[in-house]
Image (cartoon, rainbow, N blue to C red; front, top):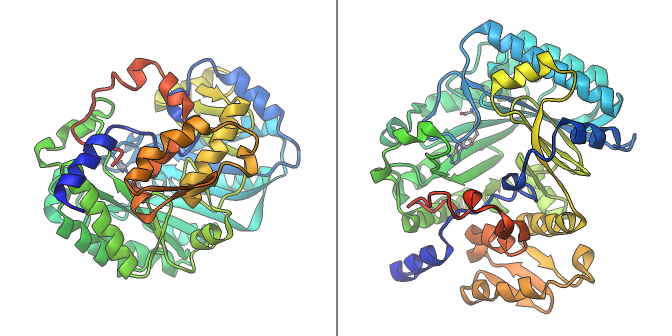
Length: 459
Ligand SMILES: C[S@@+](CC[C@H](N)C(=O)[O-])C[C@H]1O[C@@H](n2cnc3c(N)ncnc32)[C@H](O)[C@@H]1O
């Protein structure tokens, strides 16, 4: 594609869009949904409904400047242990509402860096989970690790506790990029981390890479993708750097003048995809790549791939119970999110008998329908508006709104079917946004009035 047509695309498709890991998205969460509503939704869960569990650990050993996650540095072992106790207390309160003995097929520890949870604390949390739930023998147990700070003995602990998958951050291997991001991580550290977890019997490995970081070029991101592919992680997630310094103060340290412009971001993304495909990876949805024998590819082929707050997943559970500061739960009635900061989250558990829920959103029937269509699009890159859940509903306005994407070659419309082309993959969120009626209804402060960055995050 020529530089002129790329710039034209950037002009028309720039701006901010949600990642559609849920619908309604987190931008629709308000305080109208609080602990009482969450408790009612949890009590109403059918007794035989399986659940997935997510534990958020908002601590890291050091902070990276680019990071948009809810995390801070907690050095004291006592503080880390105390946080593990809070997770168990929240789990106990949830079990009091949903009952014990439910099946669990997926369990994930995310962050932050969840391996900041001391070994004794992780063992206690897993013991509680096994006491209250029935974990399927072939369940996926996953944890995010930071290769620069893997506590001694932790890989072996994960293996012994039955973990099946780890996800690590790499982002970029270039010294200059790492310096600008405040994240120094050698290839040897990454390799040693993967070797250690694999030797401990944890075979599933995901690596996160980012394009659009300061000083990155097409050549540099291609070199990083090639070198990381040589380690044969079963999956890779390739994210576009989201620069939101008005939300995440630490990003003010990122040298903005060194950030690649949207046109360059598009090229970097395309180059990484090219390299990963040459290395035998298959593209999945918006931003994932997996080896042909990875369960994610099998799920994509079988039409069972899902998308939730953890991104693309094989997890088919309709219920996700999130524990920890800022954790989000997905329930049949809607979404709830816990208090974001650790201190008030801890106080809520210490001072009140209820759940530390701060906000959320109730799902209407229309939300449920649109959520299914958006998830279908994000997972399969296609949609049939005359069959399945869409049948009998009027989506003529959405169909018409897709026409510009057709003209750009990103979407093919055929009768009632919508198909996103391989060229349209980077614009998958724009296709999904056509079905997002809540986005236009958001208060101005949450959408239009947010300072529009020079660096469009939707590309
Ligand atoms: C919780 S971190 C990964 C685990 C671990 N803490 C580490 O640093 O290796 C989750 C991932 O989110 C992605 N991420 C964080 N901030 C981002 C941003 N501003 N834009 C795009 N991706 C981001 C990174 O790829 C990161 O690896």
